Length: 469
Image (cartoon, rainbow, N blue to C red; front, top):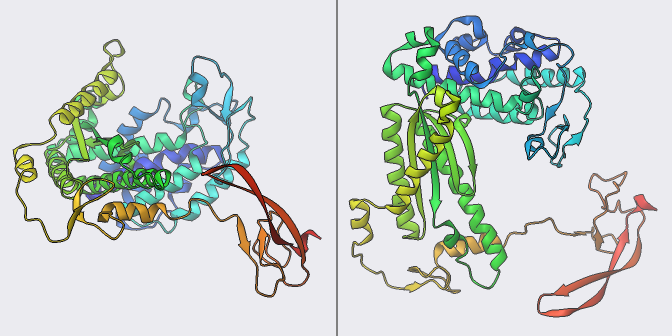
């Protein structure tokens, strides 16, 4: 990855944290001072006023992604307001709902009405945690992705701006991520064109087609997922869907690595579909063509015509991304244009080289049979499954939920106990017997069978942990 582009990415992620520092009664300079004192970090440590090319790219990107980019613009009366829920905009039916400033603990925190302001102590705690992590931060793309994950966990429930009420539904994490993506694209575009002087004329740079809006979408995804056998159909569906999700993540990681970017440039990913923001350079466009050709070639080798990845991209300017002029709706036209290109690729998926590869006559090895699930000719196992269907079956065989019953030590008179949420004072595992006192009890357990509508009852001997006696 280019050094200047990586510096611009870190500048986009870190310089905007001045708002968090300001709400914690600190400054951005205090936060950036904890970065390693090395030559690579000099452009980032200097802040927005450093004057380096990386800092200037980040400053231009920040002017596109926020409305008030100075922490001092936030008045004291609104500085600690909570993040508004985006769902409050749905037909105006949920006004006044805000996202609680809860730490990510795996639980679902629903928006609440009339949420109180975020205490300054919360910001001070987040500031201390961030500064502790920045001390050992390394200058590498992998660390940029790690920093992105840290900011997601810390800043997803914090508003990016509290100056205007209508701007309070954008989180600080989303603003930092978008700023870093824009800064990286501007850096790559200006380096190839060798026109860093455009940073001195922001209005002209806004009109430059410096960006590419890229999209990719798995075609025939429904047919691929629902090609399952009647035995264990639900688990097979889950494993195939999980495989496609991992495959899309791998596809984006390899594409971004080839383009010299990080995961900050991912706009959306889900359901076998993704949107990326890339720099409009000849190198990036050649990388897109080469990687998609290699990726679809691999899909043809492994799955034949069952799976295909359609893609498309279109150039755009900063004004298009900011929907300027609003009466022309360039932002809406941008997504319509790129989706039309991807749809056209779905209608014409193969070029001449791919068609020749699909119709090439290949020698059929001995022992080749038709898979009973997908129908492809391959070396099947004893169950009649090809290698890929066998992998999906093995993956789906893994338990999706933790076991309900825990096994007791051999010294316990009752070996099996139901999960107990009350912690035992002498053992770290909840519900586990401490081997001192146990009593057996007979627990009625209801079980049902898919083949029988009637229910039967059975009795399991279980032990009551001593911590509940």
